[in-house]
Length: 199
Image (cartoon, rainbow, N blue to C red; front, side, top):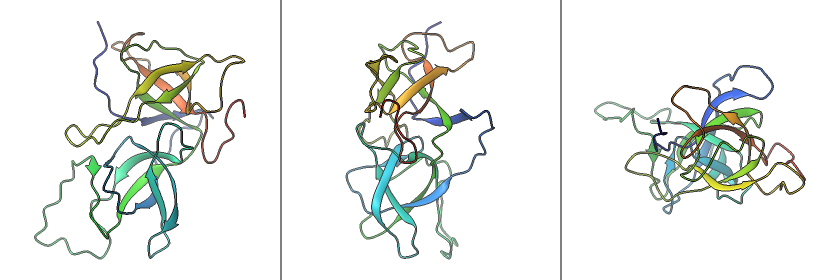
């Protein structure tokens, strides 16, 4: 049975330390950014500045950036705001930013977290190699983020610190088979809080 192409960004799976993932995210603010939407599963990087309460800013990461982490939750309402008569979409997995306001997300910043992510059409498991993400355009229909690219670097002398991920395994379930659109387990190869492999 072939794998289903159902890309959904990165989702925390476990940790490389053997400790269970504690399901914690850190609150960050996003300033007005009309050129991007932000979805659960998106990779973000640090941005200079903070909101009026000192909450640090993040922005959407590009494939060549040094990442901070992955969005795992979006705050649907800010403290102190009355919700009387307000409809809130608790199922919304992405946000767009309005001018002059902040939106808030929770980000997993631990460089030891192992993430599950789908590979693209031409990718095999490639366990032990490094990989780069394909950062797609705004996702406002399916609320989905980006898959891994087929551009892998073999885990040998040619491995590069520029690659964002290390592939540490394949997600183990009967419906996930090596080949196109298989689900991989990855850790950050380069990260704001981690020295990259090969650096």
